[in-house]
Length: 406
Image (tube, rainbow, N blue to C red; front, side):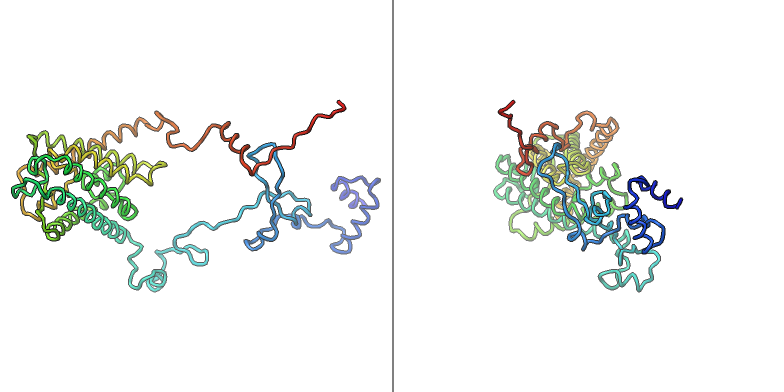
């Protein structure tokens, strides 16, 4: 009897007022489990599978709520019948495992050669999970991307210089071809749009760099490793040679795409012109591509426009190289290396170093704090509240009309 009284006190019931109900409950529990209360495990929330979600879970929707931001909760009927208030159920998703079979992640280092061959999609491809493969794929993408970028840029430059006054120097500088505003804009558009399109296409494969000077900057800011930088630089120089060879022997017009100093520019002026223009391009790449923000996905547009405005300035005086590979390819195919060719190596690399120093300087000063919220999606709370109240999915609380008897 003492055990029954203790149990009744634990249930919060009075032994005097609820004797009949307690006796009935004891009779039921005695027939099923003896003089013991039901185990608490029956009131626990059991795990449900994805197939049960559609059948056993329903949404408790209210016609209106005081807080427009209140989210309706999802409950299970079995929990409510047991008097258990459960938390909102969310569909569980397994974390992504790159190498997983049956939900168990694979340890690549402990697999045998036969097991590795079964995991890979192609036979004899055990090297597919190595860094060598990643460097090879990036280099291949950079080779094809640089070739396509310079092919369209060189082809557009050759078309713009069809009726130029060039006397066999194969140069695109304004002094060699004669100043022509239409040709200047045409060449600038060819380089800018070609870079924009090909960077947009190849940036998922190799980063879409296509420029040894930009590669140097990326290595200095530790965006890529030194080994990756060497691989990309080799691919860029090879792609420039291939693009130059294709344009020279594919089109019947004169191959007027080489870069030389013109417009009375001296060697020092050529170095500074190339350096300043390259610094603008490299810093644009840092801020739009390396720094992640809301507009990262359209970074190729800004990069292409940066090259476009640089070409508008540089074509007349230096040919607008900004890229050692762009100047090296045509010279290698024509076999003509001018005395000032070093300008197109030193100038872009100096400009890249200037961009890196300024980039590190503003990063050290935490430039994000100077203009906070520039990439934020947050709006003022009052505006958000107004939008939610005006939404057709939120019903307003029914207004109570004043009584006529008051």
